[in-house]
Image 1 (cartoon, rainbow, N blue to C red):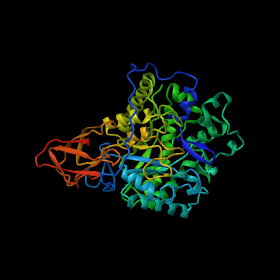
Image 2 (cartoon, helix red, strand yellow):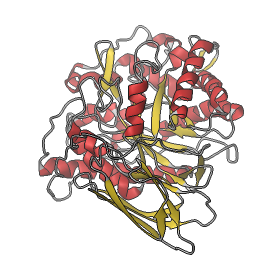
Image 3 (cartoon, one colour):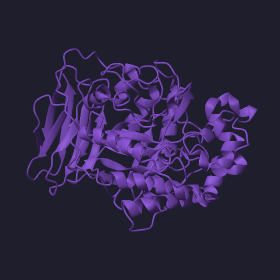
Image 4 (cartoon, one colour):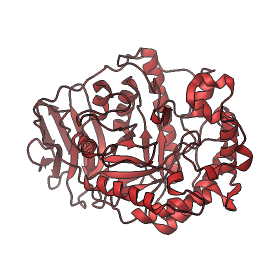
Length: 510
């Protein structure tokens, strides 16, 4: 989720522009749970002389979808902790000297991240409905190569915001003369009100209905051909975990119905368009995973869903990628939140995560929150990261912009240490079995992982232990196994003891 500031775009607010438009004028979500104390604000300690030696992740691709999990070539259960890198100005792909230069890539690896959600733009890829820009495609592949070389998984995200990011040729003729300004009553919510403009509403309605306006076919059909060209270009890249069809789809004129009572008809139209986009991808690269985002599943009022849209047996199940935001996006202060805010955000994340479980179960694939955070207020990252740990849920933080210094995440202003302390964390990148439980305390650095080992997996469990989390080093104790990595490695590896039925790893900060 993103917003424009001049020619640059920065992180933005709630889980859906539609929800923003209406929640600005009504109290939504029903009764909140009791007002428990807000989580404490924690900052990363100054690093000083590093004790923990940075170590790159060691992905074993290609990724597979097994029983709703991400599984690597060796059979280990993969957990993604990544960041978004979405370039919203020319050349509309991350630049390897600035957006993703050596300092940025070193920062990702040294901080324990193992994935990037890389923004790709249809207008740059498809200047006309029947043309693929081979130079742009080559630039995308170059960035994928660089990320793979650093040991990072890559999700390719076809991005858009308020229709901006979809090609001009995709706008229906009768929408071109319509205003792109939202209604006056909606402007109080800022740029996201643009989704409610007459031009946006008509364009989304046309897209969802599959109107034949792109060289005689639907826009989705043509976009699928562009996505297939990208799929063909990366199908041999073992580090690519798939293509996300479209960032933040919007239900158009059905938005109020979707929020208040649900909109199965609009969701069926979205599934049909996704089906059109997926078919050529599957033809070009049958085993390349596909990820899809429904209309924002925040469960504030009505339930949302997304029906399956690929042919059974045509390839892997579809993965669910969706977004969860709560408080002070595009702003906020680095300070403790009040109990009421903590209760509201806990409730919102619980509802959104429950919706994700339900929708992903319909598709049979894994789920991943690929946008969250985007605030100087730590609560968005704190509560979400805690919940994700409990569910062993993969995520991508919004977002990484060019770094002024390798040790600090930067957007248009530096992300405070108090937020960074929540996303730079210890976690199991790849587990040689099934995770039973996992937790991390940013305040103390205490990490615990319990898993049931799989004797058929001939690979080590890999645990990210970032240098900045353990500035003076760490101590690790394993029950049912043994550490096999070098002392104070940034990625600790664990071998299961013969006959062990359960392995427990405990890490403490020195």
